[in-house]
Length: 553
Image 1: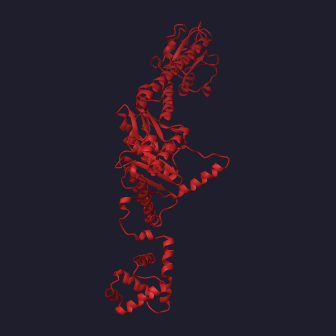
Image 2: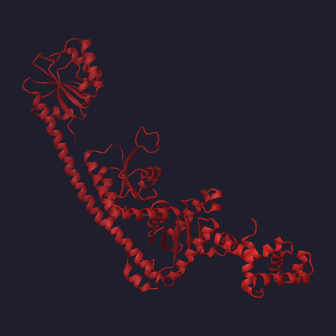
Image 3: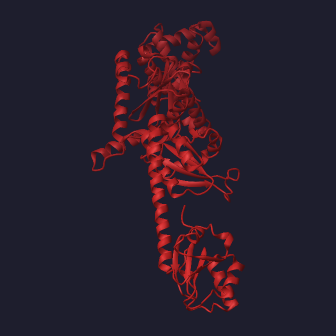
Protein backbone atom coordinates (compact mmCIF):
# COMPACT_ATOMS: atom_id res chain seq x y z
CA UNK A 1 0.00 0.00 0.00
CA UNK A 2 1.25 3.56 -0.71
CA UNK A 3 1.79 5.89 2.27
CA UNK A 4 -1.29 7.53 3.77
CA UNK A 5 -1.83 10.39 6.15
CA UNK A 6 -2.67 7.80 8.82
CA UNK A 7 0.67 6.03 8.34
CA UNK A 8 2.51 9.36 8.69
CA UNK A 9 0.56 10.23 11.84
CA UNK A 10 1.49 6.85 13.31
CA UNK A 11 5.16 7.32 12.37
CA UNK A 12 6.78 7.51 15.79
CA UNK A 13 9.66 9.74 14.70
CA UNK A 14 7.49 12.48 13.16
CA UNK A 15 5.27 13.26 16.19
CA UNK A 16 2.44 14.65 14.02
CA UNK A 17 -0.89 15.70 15.55
CA UNK A 18 -4.24 15.71 13.75
CA UNK A 19 -6.10 19.00 14.14
CA UNK A 20 -8.79 18.54 11.46
CA UNK A 21 -10.08 15.92 9.00
CA UNK A 22 -9.65 12.95 11.32
CA UNK A 23 -12.03 10.87 9.16
CA UNK A 24 -9.97 11.32 5.96
CA UNK A 25 -6.58 10.05 7.02
CA UNK A 26 -6.74 6.91 4.84
CA UNK A 27 -6.13 8.93 1.66
CA UNK A 28 -2.91 7.92 -0.19
CA UNK A 29 -0.11 10.52 -0.30
CA UNK A 30 1.65 10.84 -3.65
CA UNK A 31 4.30 13.30 -2.41
CA UNK A 32 5.17 15.80 0.30
CA UNK A 33 5.74 19.33 -0.99
CA UNK A 34 6.87 22.52 0.74
CA UNK A 35 5.48 25.85 -0.50
CA UNK A 36 5.08 29.24 1.17
CA UNK A 37 3.28 30.73 -1.83
CA UNK A 38 -0.02 32.43 -1.14
CA UNK A 39 -1.46 30.36 -4.00
CA UNK A 40 0.52 27.14 -4.66
CA UNK A 41 -2.35 25.51 -6.59
CA UNK A 42 -0.85 26.06 -10.08
CA UNK A 43 2.09 23.90 -9.02
CA UNK A 44 0.03 21.03 -7.57
CA UNK A 45 -0.86 17.78 -9.40
CA UNK A 46 -3.14 16.30 -6.76
CA UNK A 47 -2.43 13.83 -3.99
CA UNK A 48 0.20 15.98 -2.22
CA UNK A 49 0.70 16.70 1.47
CA UNK A 50 1.44 20.44 1.50
CA UNK A 51 3.85 21.62 4.22
CA UNK A 52 3.79 25.32 5.29
CA UNK A 53 4.93 27.73 8.02
CA UNK A 54 2.46 30.46 6.89
CA UNK A 55 5.35 32.82 6.18
CA UNK A 56 3.34 34.73 3.56
CA UNK A 57 -0.18 33.97 4.76
CA UNK A 58 -2.48 35.91 6.99
CA UNK A 59 -3.34 32.73 8.85
CA UNK A 60 -5.52 34.56 11.38
CA UNK A 61 -7.91 35.98 8.75
CA UNK A 62 -10.93 33.62 8.55
CA UNK A 63 -12.00 34.79 5.09
CA UNK A 64 -8.49 34.49 3.65
CA UNK A 65 -8.00 31.05 5.19
CA UNK A 66 -11.36 29.84 3.85
CA UNK A 67 -10.37 30.85 0.30
CA UNK A 68 -6.89 29.31 0.74
CA UNK A 69 -8.09 25.95 2.06
CA UNK A 70 -10.93 25.73 -0.47
CA UNK A 71 -8.45 26.22 -3.32
CA UNK A 72 -6.17 23.50 -1.94
CA UNK A 73 -9.02 21.01 -1.56
CA UNK A 74 -10.26 21.75 -5.06
CA UNK A 75 -6.77 21.09 -6.45
CA UNK A 76 -6.66 17.61 -4.91
CA UNK A 77 -4.26 18.36 -2.05
CA UNK A 78 -4.87 15.52 0.44
CA UNK A 79 -3.53 17.20 3.57
CA UNK A 80 -1.94 20.31 5.05
CA UNK A 81 1.01 20.17 7.45
CA UNK A 82 1.52 23.30 9.59
CA UNK A 83 4.83 23.84 11.40
CA UNK A 84 4.29 25.43 14.84
CA UNK A 85 6.96 27.41 16.64
CA UNK A 86 8.26 29.08 13.49
CA UNK A 87 5.96 31.96 12.54
CA UNK A 88 3.10 30.95 14.83
CA UNK A 89 3.32 29.27 18.22
CA UNK A 90 0.11 27.39 17.47
CA UNK A 91 -2.05 26.81 14.44
CA UNK A 92 -4.38 29.82 14.09
CA UNK A 93 -7.99 29.03 14.80
CA UNK A 94 -9.04 30.57 11.47
CA UNK A 95 -7.02 27.94 9.60
CA UNK A 96 -8.31 25.09 11.78
CA UNK A 97 -11.92 26.19 11.23
CA UNK A 98 -11.44 26.47 7.45
CA UNK A 99 -9.84 22.98 7.28
CA UNK A 100 -12.70 21.47 9.28
CA UNK A 101 -15.27 23.20 7.08
CA UNK A 102 -13.69 21.84 3.88
CA UNK A 103 -12.89 18.43 5.37
CA UNK A 104 -9.18 18.86 4.61
CA UNK A 105 -6.91 16.97 7.03
CA UNK A 106 -4.70 19.42 8.99
CA UNK A 107 -1.57 18.08 10.71
CA UNK A 108 0.42 19.93 13.33
CA UNK A 109 4.14 19.57 12.79
CA UNK A 110 6.21 20.14 15.95
CA UNK A 111 9.21 22.48 15.96
CA UNK A 112 11.69 19.63 16.31
CA UNK A 113 10.38 17.79 13.19
CA UNK A 114 11.89 19.25 10.01
CA UNK A 115 9.92 19.16 6.79
CA UNK A 116 12.79 17.16 5.30
CA UNK A 117 12.04 14.30 7.69
CA UNK A 118 8.43 14.19 6.49
CA UNK A 119 9.54 14.26 2.83
CA UNK A 120 12.01 11.41 3.50
CA UNK A 121 9.32 9.38 5.25
CA UNK A 122 6.94 9.79 2.31
CA UNK A 123 9.68 9.01 -0.21
CA UNK A 124 10.81 5.92 1.71
CA UNK A 125 7.23 4.65 1.98
CA UNK A 126 6.66 5.17 -1.76
CA UNK A 127 9.92 3.37 -2.58
CA UNK A 128 8.98 0.50 -0.24
CA UNK A 129 5.58 0.24 -1.87
CA UNK A 130 7.14 0.17 -5.32
CA UNK A 131 9.62 -2.49 -4.19
CA UNK A 132 6.78 -4.59 -2.81
CA UNK A 133 4.92 -4.18 -6.10
CA UNK A 134 7.97 -5.22 -8.15
CA UNK A 135 8.62 -8.18 -5.85
CA UNK A 136 4.98 -9.22 -6.05
CA UNK A 137 5.13 -8.78 -9.82
CA UNK A 138 8.13 -11.13 -10.10
CA UNK A 139 6.40 -13.64 -7.83
CA UNK A 140 3.28 -13.42 -10.00
CA UNK A 141 5.40 -13.91 -13.11
CA UNK A 142 6.92 -17.08 -11.65
CA UNK A 143 3.51 -18.39 -10.64
CA UNK A 144 1.99 -17.60 -14.04
CA UNK A 145 4.91 -19.31 -15.79
CA UNK A 146 4.57 -22.38 -13.57
CA UNK A 147 0.84 -22.64 -14.19
CA UNK A 148 1.31 -22.12 -17.93
CA UNK A 149 3.85 -24.94 -18.16
CA UNK A 150 1.66 -27.23 -16.06
CA UNK A 151 -1.86 -26.45 -17.30
CA UNK A 152 -1.50 -24.31 -20.44
CA UNK A 153 -3.52 -21.13 -21.08
CA UNK A 154 -6.36 -22.31 -18.82
CA UNK A 155 -4.01 -22.56 -15.84
CA UNK A 156 -2.51 -19.16 -16.63
CA UNK A 157 -5.95 -17.52 -16.72
CA UNK A 158 -6.86 -19.04 -13.36
CA UNK A 159 -3.63 -17.77 -11.80
CA UNK A 160 -4.05 -14.33 -13.35
CA UNK A 161 -7.62 -14.02 -12.09
CA UNK A 162 -6.39 -14.80 -8.58
CA UNK A 163 -3.54 -12.28 -8.86
CA UNK A 164 -5.80 -9.38 -9.88
CA UNK A 165 -8.73 -10.47 -7.68
CA UNK A 166 -11.02 -10.50 -10.71
CA UNK A 167 -11.48 -12.57 -13.84
CA UNK A 168 -9.63 -13.24 -17.10
CA UNK A 169 -10.64 -14.58 -20.52
CA UNK A 170 -8.90 -15.58 -23.74
CA UNK A 171 -10.50 -14.93 -27.16
CA UNK A 172 -9.70 -16.41 -30.56
CA UNK A 173 -9.38 -14.53 -33.84
CA UNK A 174 -13.15 -14.39 -34.35
CA UNK A 175 -13.78 -12.86 -30.93
CA UNK A 176 -15.20 -16.07 -29.43
CA UNK A 177 -14.26 -16.96 -25.86
CA UNK A 178 -11.75 -19.84 -25.81
CA UNK A 179 -11.23 -20.05 -22.04
CA UNK A 180 -12.17 -18.05 -18.95
CA UNK A 181 -11.44 -18.10 -15.23
CA UNK A 182 -13.25 -18.44 -12.91
CA UNK A 183 -15.92 -20.49 -14.70
CA UNK A 184 -18.64 -17.90 -14.13
CA UNK A 185 -16.63 -15.33 -16.12
CA UNK A 186 -17.37 -17.01 -19.45
CA UNK A 187 -20.81 -15.41 -19.86
CA UNK A 188 -19.52 -12.02 -18.82
CA UNK A 189 -16.60 -12.27 -21.25
CA UNK A 190 -18.93 -13.27 -24.11
CA UNK A 191 -20.59 -9.84 -23.93
CA UNK A 192 -17.35 -8.25 -25.12
CA UNK A 193 -17.08 -10.07 -28.47
CA UNK A 194 -17.84 -6.90 -30.45
CA UNK A 195 -15.19 -4.96 -28.50
CA UNK A 196 -12.61 -7.69 -29.21
CA UNK A 197 -13.44 -7.59 -32.92
CA UNK A 198 -12.98 -3.80 -32.94
CA UNK A 199 -9.64 -4.23 -31.17
CA UNK A 200 -8.47 -6.57 -33.97
CA UNK A 201 -8.98 -3.81 -36.53
CA UNK A 202 -6.25 -1.75 -34.85
CA UNK A 203 -2.53 -2.37 -35.47
CA UNK A 204 -0.95 -4.64 -32.88
CA UNK A 205 -0.11 -4.25 -30.07
CA UNK A 206 -3.39 -2.65 -29.09
CA UNK A 207 -5.38 -2.30 -25.88
CA UNK A 208 -8.60 -0.68 -24.68
CA UNK A 209 -10.68 -0.29 -21.53
CA UNK A 210 -14.41 -1.02 -21.52
CA UNK A 211 -17.07 -1.19 -18.86
CA UNK A 212 -16.49 0.17 -15.39
CA UNK A 213 -18.63 2.41 -13.24
CA UNK A 214 -19.96 5.36 -15.20
CA UNK A 215 -19.44 3.69 -18.58
CA UNK A 216 -22.76 3.91 -20.41
CA UNK A 217 -21.69 1.56 -23.23
CA UNK A 218 -21.80 -1.46 -20.89
CA UNK A 219 -24.20 -0.52 -18.09
CA UNK A 220 -24.87 -4.20 -17.34
CA UNK A 221 -21.22 -4.76 -16.50
CA UNK A 222 -19.79 -2.66 -13.68
CA UNK A 223 -16.39 -4.30 -14.01
CA UNK A 224 -13.50 -2.37 -15.42
CA UNK A 225 -12.23 -4.58 -18.26
CA UNK A 226 -8.90 -4.20 -20.04
CA UNK A 227 -8.59 -5.77 -23.51
CA UNK A 228 -5.14 -6.56 -24.91
CA UNK A 229 -4.27 -7.96 -28.34
CA UNK A 230 -1.91 -10.94 -28.41
CA UNK A 231 0.68 -11.88 -31.00
CA UNK A 232 3.41 -10.30 -33.07
CA UNK A 233 1.79 -10.30 -36.51
CA UNK A 234 0.17 -7.27 -38.08
CA UNK A 235 -3.31 -8.53 -37.23
CA UNK A 236 -3.65 -10.07 -33.74
CA UNK A 237 -4.93 -13.63 -33.73
CA UNK A 238 -6.22 -13.60 -30.13
CA UNK A 239 -6.96 -11.26 -27.25
CA UNK A 240 -6.88 -11.20 -23.45
CA UNK A 241 -9.55 -9.63 -21.23
CA UNK A 242 -8.93 -8.81 -17.57
CA UNK A 243 -11.89 -7.70 -15.45
CA UNK A 244 -11.50 -6.05 -12.04
CA UNK A 245 -13.59 -3.95 -9.71
CA UNK A 246 -11.11 -1.04 -9.85
CA UNK A 247 -8.07 0.13 -11.79
CA UNK A 248 -5.06 -2.18 -11.65
CA UNK A 249 -2.28 -1.48 -9.20
CA UNK A 250 1.43 -1.76 -9.96
CA UNK A 251 1.72 -5.42 -8.94
CA UNK A 252 -1.41 -6.34 -10.86
CA UNK A 253 -0.08 -4.49 -13.89
CA UNK A 254 3.13 -6.56 -13.78
CA UNK A 255 1.02 -9.71 -13.66
CA UNK A 256 -1.05 -8.69 -16.69
CA UNK A 257 2.04 -7.83 -18.73
CA UNK A 258 3.59 -11.19 -17.82
CA UNK A 259 0.38 -12.95 -18.88
CA UNK A 260 0.40 -11.13 -22.23
CA UNK A 261 3.97 -12.26 -22.91
CA UNK A 262 3.28 -15.86 -21.89
CA UNK A 263 0.05 -16.10 -23.87
CA UNK A 264 1.79 -14.67 -26.92
CA UNK A 265 4.43 -17.38 -26.63
CA UNK A 266 1.88 -20.16 -26.16
CA UNK A 267 -0.70 -19.09 -28.74
CA UNK A 268 1.55 -17.90 -31.57
CA UNK A 269 4.55 -19.80 -32.82
CA UNK A 270 7.69 -17.96 -33.77
CA UNK A 271 8.14 -16.93 -37.40
CA UNK A 272 10.65 -19.64 -38.21
CA UNK A 273 8.67 -22.35 -36.40
CA UNK A 274 5.50 -21.31 -38.20
CA UNK A 275 7.25 -21.47 -41.56
CA UNK A 276 8.58 -24.93 -40.68
CA UNK A 277 5.05 -25.99 -39.81
CA UNK A 278 3.79 -24.73 -43.17
CA UNK A 279 6.47 -26.75 -44.93
CA UNK A 280 5.42 -29.88 -43.02
CA UNK A 281 1.78 -29.23 -43.91
CA UNK A 282 2.66 -28.86 -47.59
CA UNK A 283 4.84 -31.99 -47.56
CA UNK A 284 2.11 -34.09 -45.94
CA UNK A 285 -0.42 -32.85 -48.50
CA UNK A 286 1.92 -33.65 -51.41
CA UNK A 287 2.43 -37.19 -50.08
CA UNK A 288 -1.31 -37.72 -49.77
CA UNK A 289 -1.91 -36.45 -53.32
CA UNK A 290 0.91 -38.71 -54.58
CA UNK A 291 -0.85 -41.76 -53.13
CA UNK A 292 1.58 -42.24 -50.23
CA UNK A 293 -0.62 -42.08 -47.12
CA UNK A 294 1.73 -44.23 -45.03
CA UNK A 295 4.63 -41.85 -45.64
CA UNK A 296 2.33 -38.92 -44.86
CA UNK A 297 1.39 -40.48 -41.51
CA UNK A 298 5.05 -41.09 -40.71
CA UNK A 299 5.99 -37.47 -41.38
CA UNK A 300 2.93 -36.07 -39.58
CA UNK A 301 3.28 -38.22 -36.47
CA UNK A 302 0.76 -36.97 -33.90
CA UNK A 303 0.65 -33.49 -35.44
CA UNK A 304 -2.87 -33.89 -36.87
CA UNK A 305 -4.27 -36.40 -34.39
CA UNK A 306 -6.62 -38.79 -36.17
CA UNK A 307 -7.28 -36.51 -39.15
CA UNK A 308 -5.39 -38.77 -41.57
CA UNK A 309 -7.26 -41.87 -40.43
CA UNK A 310 -10.87 -40.68 -40.25
CA UNK A 311 -12.98 -39.66 -43.27
CA UNK A 312 -12.13 -36.11 -44.27
CA UNK A 313 -13.19 -33.46 -46.76
CA UNK A 314 -10.83 -31.64 -49.10
CA UNK A 315 -11.53 -27.92 -49.51
CA UNK A 316 -10.02 -25.82 -52.29
CA UNK A 317 -10.61 -22.07 -52.20
CA UNK A 318 -9.39 -19.17 -54.27
CA UNK A 319 -9.99 -15.49 -54.78
CA UNK A 320 -8.96 -13.32 -57.73
CA UNK A 321 -7.43 -10.79 -55.33
CA UNK A 322 -5.11 -13.46 -53.91
CA UNK A 323 -3.53 -13.89 -57.33
CA UNK A 324 -2.68 -10.20 -57.40
CA UNK A 325 -1.24 -10.35 -53.89
CA UNK A 326 0.88 -13.35 -54.80
CA UNK A 327 2.30 -11.46 -57.75
CA UNK A 328 2.97 -8.44 -55.55
CA UNK A 329 4.71 -10.63 -52.97
CA UNK A 330 6.91 -12.15 -55.69
CA UNK A 331 7.85 -8.68 -56.91
CA UNK A 332 8.62 -7.59 -53.35
CA UNK A 333 10.84 -10.64 -52.82
CA UNK A 334 12.79 -9.71 -55.93
CA UNK A 335 13.36 -6.19 -54.57
CA UNK A 336 15.16 -4.91 -51.50
CA UNK A 337 12.36 -5.47 -49.01
CA UNK A 338 11.39 -8.94 -47.88
CA UNK A 339 7.69 -9.64 -47.67
CA UNK A 340 6.01 -10.39 -44.37
CA UNK A 341 5.76 -14.15 -43.81
CA UNK A 342 4.51 -16.46 -41.14
CA UNK A 343 0.87 -15.34 -41.17
CA UNK A 344 -2.33 -16.43 -42.78
CA UNK A 345 -3.08 -15.20 -46.30
CA UNK A 346 -4.58 -11.77 -46.39
CA UNK A 347 -8.01 -10.81 -47.66
CA UNK A 348 -10.84 -13.28 -48.22
CA UNK A 349 -8.60 -16.35 -48.03
CA UNK A 350 -7.17 -15.12 -44.73
CA UNK A 351 -10.67 -14.66 -43.35
CA UNK A 352 -11.52 -18.23 -44.36
CA UNK A 353 -8.38 -19.52 -42.62
CA UNK A 354 -9.37 -17.74 -39.42
CA UNK A 355 -12.92 -19.11 -39.57
CA UNK A 356 -11.79 -22.71 -40.19
CA UNK A 357 -8.93 -22.72 -37.67
CA UNK A 358 -11.00 -21.01 -34.96
CA UNK A 359 -13.86 -23.50 -35.38
CA UNK A 360 -11.43 -26.44 -35.31
CA UNK A 361 -9.70 -25.09 -32.18
CA UNK A 362 -12.98 -24.66 -30.33
CA UNK A 363 -14.07 -28.18 -31.23
CA UNK A 364 -10.67 -29.74 -30.51
CA UNK A 365 -10.30 -30.88 -34.12
CA UNK A 366 -7.13 -31.14 -36.16
CA UNK A 367 -7.06 -29.33 -39.48
CA UNK A 368 -4.44 -29.08 -42.24
CA UNK A 369 -4.24 -25.73 -44.03
CA UNK A 370 -1.87 -25.23 -46.97
CA UNK A 371 -1.68 -21.95 -48.95
CA UNK A 372 -0.86 -22.60 -52.62
CA UNK A 373 -0.22 -19.21 -54.17
CA UNK A 374 -3.60 -17.79 -55.08
CA UNK A 375 -5.30 -20.89 -53.70
CA UNK A 376 -5.90 -22.43 -50.30
CA UNK A 377 -6.17 -26.18 -49.65
CA UNK A 378 -7.76 -27.41 -46.43
CA UNK A 379 -8.06 -30.93 -45.07
CA UNK A 380 -10.76 -31.15 -42.37
CA UNK A 381 -12.70 -33.89 -40.61
CA UNK A 382 -15.91 -34.88 -42.40
CA UNK A 383 -18.93 -33.73 -40.43
CA UNK A 384 -16.73 -31.64 -38.13
CA UNK A 385 -16.93 -28.06 -36.96
CA UNK A 386 -14.31 -26.79 -39.43
CA UNK A 387 -16.26 -27.98 -42.51
CA UNK A 388 -19.51 -26.65 -41.07
CA UNK A 389 -17.90 -23.27 -40.35
CA UNK A 390 -16.52 -23.11 -43.92
CA UNK A 391 -19.95 -23.79 -45.45
CA UNK A 392 -21.64 -21.33 -43.08
CA UNK A 393 -19.06 -18.63 -43.88
CA UNK A 394 -19.54 -19.16 -47.62
CA UNK A 395 -23.33 -19.06 -47.26
CA UNK A 396 -23.10 -15.76 -45.36
CA UNK A 397 -20.91 -14.26 -48.10
CA UNK A 398 -23.29 -15.44 -50.82
CA UNK A 399 -26.30 -14.05 -48.98
CA UNK A 400 -24.58 -10.67 -48.67
CA UNK A 401 -23.52 -10.57 -52.33
CA UNK A 402 -25.64 -8.42 -54.67
CA UNK A 403 -27.52 -10.32 -57.36
CA UNK A 404 -25.48 -8.63 -60.08
CA UNK A 405 -22.25 -9.94 -58.55
CA UNK A 406 -23.68 -13.48 -58.44
CA UNK A 407 -24.42 -13.39 -62.16
CA UNK A 408 -21.01 -11.98 -63.00
CA UNK A 409 -19.03 -14.23 -60.68
CA UNK A 410 -18.39 -11.58 -58.00
CA UNK A 411 -15.84 -8.82 -57.62
CA UNK A 412 -12.08 -9.08 -57.22
CA UNK A 413 -12.32 -9.80 -53.50
CA UNK A 414 -14.93 -12.57 -53.91
CA UNK A 415 -14.26 -16.01 -52.48
CA UNK A 416 -14.88 -19.24 -54.41
CA UNK A 417 -14.84 -22.60 -52.58
CA UNK A 418 -15.09 -26.21 -53.72
CA UNK A 419 -15.65 -29.14 -51.33
CA UNK A 420 -14.95 -32.77 -52.10
CA UNK A 421 -17.10 -35.70 -51.06
CA UNK A 422 -16.03 -37.53 -47.87
CA UNK A 423 -12.85 -39.45 -48.55
CA UNK A 424 -9.92 -41.23 -46.93
CA UNK A 425 -6.13 -40.99 -47.21
CA UNK A 426 -5.92 -43.56 -50.03
CA UNK A 427 -8.30 -41.51 -52.21
CA UNK A 428 -6.87 -38.09 -51.32
CA UNK A 429 -5.92 -37.39 -54.95
CA UNK A 430 -9.46 -38.12 -56.10
CA UNK A 431 -10.82 -35.88 -53.33
CA UNK A 432 -8.53 -33.08 -54.49
CA UNK A 433 -9.82 -33.42 -58.06
CA UNK A 434 -13.40 -33.41 -56.77
CA UNK A 435 -12.76 -30.19 -54.84
CA UNK A 436 -11.20 -28.61 -57.96
CA UNK A 437 -14.19 -29.66 -60.04
CA UNK A 438 -16.57 -28.23 -57.47
CA UNK A 439 -14.52 -25.02 -57.43
CA UNK A 440 -14.76 -24.74 -61.22
CA UNK A 441 -18.52 -25.30 -61.11
CA UNK A 442 -18.89 -22.67 -58.38
CA UNK A 443 -16.94 -20.19 -60.49
CA UNK A 444 -19.04 -20.89 -63.60
CA UNK A 445 -22.33 -20.72 -61.72
CA UNK A 446 -21.40 -17.53 -59.87
CA UNK A 447 -21.62 -19.31 -56.50
CA UNK A 448 -19.39 -18.84 -53.47
CA UNK A 449 -19.35 -22.52 -52.52
CA UNK A 450 -20.29 -25.78 -54.25
CA UNK A 451 -19.95 -29.27 -52.77
CA UNK A 452 -19.02 -32.10 -55.10
CA UNK A 453 -22.24 -33.93 -54.27
CA UNK A 454 -24.10 -30.98 -55.83
CA UNK A 455 -21.99 -30.71 -58.98
CA UNK A 456 -24.48 -32.77 -60.97
CA UNK A 457 -27.44 -30.83 -59.59
CA UNK A 458 -29.11 -28.29 -61.85
CA UNK A 459 -28.35 -27.80 -65.53
CA UNK A 460 -25.06 -28.19 -67.37
CA UNK A 461 -25.83 -25.10 -69.41
CA UNK A 462 -24.30 -22.56 -67.01
CA UNK A 463 -21.02 -24.43 -67.47
CA UNK A 464 -21.07 -23.49 -71.14
CA UNK A 465 -20.94 -19.77 -70.39
CA UNK A 466 -17.33 -19.50 -71.47
CA UNK A 467 -15.78 -17.50 -74.32
CA UNK A 468 -13.88 -20.54 -75.63
CA UNK A 469 -17.07 -22.63 -75.73
CA UNK A 470 -18.96 -19.85 -77.51
CA UNK A 471 -16.15 -19.45 -80.03
CA UNK A 472 -16.24 -23.19 -80.77
CA UNK A 473 -20.03 -23.11 -81.13
CA UNK A 474 -19.96 -20.11 -83.46
CA UNK A 475 -17.30 -21.78 -85.60
CA UNK A 476 -19.23 -25.04 -85.85
CA UNK A 477 -22.51 -23.37 -86.83
CA UNK A 478 -21.13 -20.55 -88.99
CA UNK A 479 -21.35 -22.44 -92.31
CA UNK A 480 -24.96 -23.48 -91.57
CA UNK A 481 -25.94 -19.93 -90.68
CA UNK A 482 -24.26 -18.56 -93.79
CA UNK A 483 -26.31 -21.04 -95.84
CA UNK A 484 -29.54 -19.96 -94.09
CA UNK A 485 -28.69 -16.30 -94.68
CA UNK A 486 -29.02 -16.88 -98.46
CA UNK A 487 -32.64 -17.97 -97.99
CA UNK A 488 -32.00 -21.50 -99.23
CA UNK A 489 -33.39 -23.30 -96.15
CA UNK A 490 -33.52 -23.26 -92.40
CA UNK A 491 -30.73 -25.71 -91.66
CA UNK A 492 -30.00 -24.49 -88.09
CA UNK A 493 -33.67 -24.72 -87.09
CA UNK A 494 -33.93 -28.11 -88.76
CA UNK A 495 -30.90 -29.45 -86.85
CA UNK A 496 -32.36 -28.17 -83.58
CA UNK A 497 -35.76 -29.78 -84.21
CA UNK A 498 -34.26 -33.08 -85.36
CA UNK A 499 -31.90 -33.33 -82.37
CA UNK A 500 -34.60 -32.34 -79.90
CA UNK A 501 -36.79 -35.17 -81.30
CA UNK A 502 -33.89 -37.66 -81.00
CA UNK A 503 -33.74 -38.14 -84.79
CA UNK A 504 -37.44 -38.96 -85.21
CA UNK A 505 -38.24 -37.69 -88.71
CA UNK A 506 -41.99 -37.40 -88.51
CA UNK A 507 -42.07 -35.63 -85.15
CA UNK A 508 -39.31 -33.21 -86.13
CA UNK A 509 -40.91 -32.48 -89.53
CA UNK A 510 -44.23 -31.79 -87.80
CA UNK A 511 -42.54 -29.31 -85.47
CA UNK A 512 -41.07 -27.51 -88.50
CA UNK A 513 -44.28 -27.73 -90.57
CA UNK A 514 -42.51 -29.46 -93.48
CA UNK A 515 -42.64 -32.88 -95.10
CA UNK A 516 -40.30 -35.51 -93.70
CA UNK A 517 -38.59 -35.84 -97.09
CA UNK A 518 -37.81 -32.13 -96.97
CA UNK A 519 -36.26 -32.61 -93.54
CA UNK A 520 -34.21 -35.58 -94.77
CA UNK A 521 -32.89 -33.43 -97.63
CA UNK A 522 -31.92 -30.67 -95.19
CA UNK A 523 -30.05 -33.11 -92.95
CA UNK A 524 -28.08 -34.41 -95.96
CA UNK A 525 -27.17 -30.79 -96.75
CA UNK A 526 -26.00 -30.33 -93.15
CA UNK A 527 -23.71 -33.37 -93.50
CA UNK A 528 -22.38 -32.06 -96.83
CA UNK A 529 -21.68 -28.57 -95.48
CA UNK A 530 -20.07 -29.78 -92.24
CA UNK A 531 -18.28 -32.71 -93.86
CA UNK A 532 -19.36 -34.90 -90.91
CA UNK A 533 -21.92 -37.68 -90.48
CA UNK A 534 -24.92 -37.17 -88.22
CA UNK A 535 -24.78 -40.89 -87.45
CA UNK A 536 -21.75 -40.11 -85.25
CA UNK A 537 -23.01 -39.49 -81.66
CA UNK A 538 -20.07 -37.14 -81.01
CA UNK A 539 -21.18 -34.94 -83.89
CA UNK A 540 -24.76 -34.86 -82.62
CA UNK A 541 -23.53 -34.02 -79.11
CA UNK A 542 -21.31 -31.18 -80.37
CA UNK A 543 -24.09 -29.73 -82.48
CA UNK A 544 -26.55 -29.81 -79.58
CA UNK A 545 -24.10 -28.15 -77.18
CA UNK A 546 -23.28 -25.55 -79.83
CA UNK A 547 -26.97 -24.76 -80.27
CA UNK A 548 -27.48 -24.46 -76.48
CA UNK A 549 -24.31 -22.37 -75.98
CA UNK A 550 -25.39 -19.86 -78.64
CA UNK A 551 -29.07 -19.78 -77.76
CA UNK A 552 -30.30 -16.34 -76.67
CA UNK A 553 -30.82 -15.91 -72.90
